[in-house]
Image 1 (cartoon, rainbow, N blue to C red):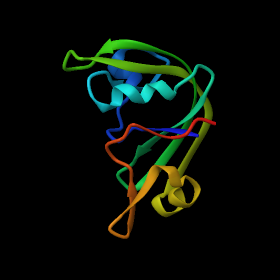
Image 2 (cartoon, rainbow, N blue to C red):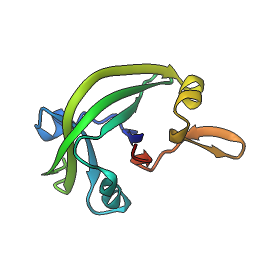
Image 3 (tube, helix red, strand yellow):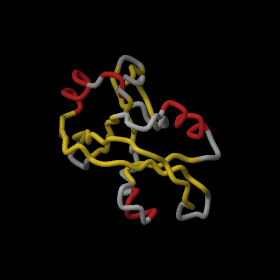
Image 4 (cartoon, rainbow, N blue to C red):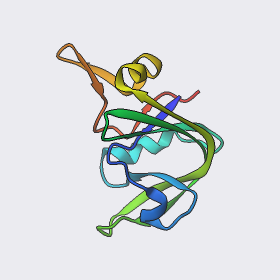
Length: 123
């Protein structure tokens, strides 16, 4: 499963004016190469965080990407598709047990893989 790590909790549909948008990647840094794993028809889990330390996993069916300027005017790749209706909210411990690909061990502690936008392997 591929996970889209929406660490900044960005609302791609609102930011880019594309109703079916669910995630975006920079086109100028290490994120640019991460979209190479995407194929139309794939199901992806988009991870967002909440103030109460819970993690939300929302399943999307990826159909295509478009390129749009971000609020700073830089081009980003915007992923589009349809929500499958599957949303799961878990405490971090539950999420680590069920979705270990989105965590790493750092100094003996399990933490989210921040700084990477797409993690995991395609099904």
